[in-house]
Length: 339
Ligand SMILES: NC(=O)c1ccc[n+]([C@@H]2O[C@H](COP(=O)([O-])OP(=O)(O)OC[C@H]3O[C@@H](n4cnc5c(N)ncnc54)[C@H](O)[C@@H]3O)[C@@H](O)[C@H]2O)c1
Image 1 (cartoon, rainbow, N blue to C red):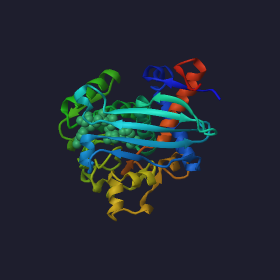
Image 2: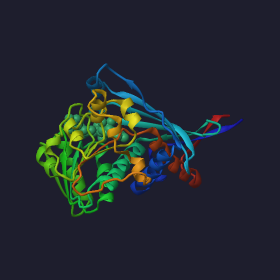
Image 3: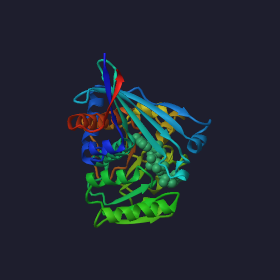
Image 4: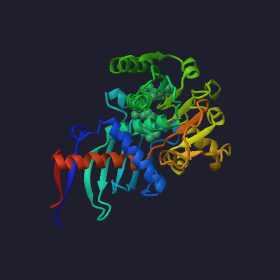
């Protein structure tokens, strides 16, 4: 009857390889492919929300529960439990904090309690990287990142893995000091990359081959009219880009369409709710592209809109890789669950 769980804190997760972006991208490609084959259980988010409106939520915060099962080589169930405290920065704390619990898919017993904070950043960066690899123009050189918070460095790292020829980064943030900090970090970290903080996103958006939005904005600040031919615009959070970005797109690609409609905060979801966008207008879920069922970008001049809501199965896959490595190499603390 005795059962143990492995406890992996932040340091243990780092020792187990959580910060390896190339491994995270490989995980995401496998999970998206498993999704396209139907070898996952992906029931969507349960949102524990403070306040009554999206504006309240952005002020007061939320905790999301994201359960799932991933098949294939992962064969693991679990849940991501992610707290978002928008005022945490005043206490010197990151906004997001994540716990991942892994469960044996056979007995359903817990196997691992892990700090998933880096998991969440890496897998979201990797989901951006998979989108850039499949949907950005081959000749993409100019990248605009909007929102210079916790997610931004991972989005940048993954985008540069997917398109190493990107030579110019523009950074826009409602807090100019955050944009400046990310630009400085980018120039230090990536030799030869020109990184420019901007106070207004318009000129940079007009030039950008790839626009990645990872902000807390609940009102659009990227206009469809600004997008140049060949642009990939990535709406990684809420209502950040206007409806013209979707209307002008030659292809609309998403990660998990049912989950996006369930969450109902992104541009394309709100358009669907208002009858301005139909299910049939989705070109593909990204898993259909990664698995070769549907094409990604076909012409250099296509405008493509990508929206990702994320899912617990992504976090479960990355955590499973780290958990198995940790078990093999004696990393972490074994805790008695049933003594
Ligand atoms: N799609 C996914 O799978 C996924 C996964 C994780 C997080 N997210 C989302 O990504 C977003 C960013 O997450 P994070 O952890 O980096 O948050 P964060 O709080 O660390 O950073 C957010 C940044 O956005 C900036 N910002 C806020 N409002 C803005 C506006 N109107 N215009 C421009 N910049 C603005 C803030 O100043 C901050 O620098 C969140 O909305 C989060 O929910 C998406």
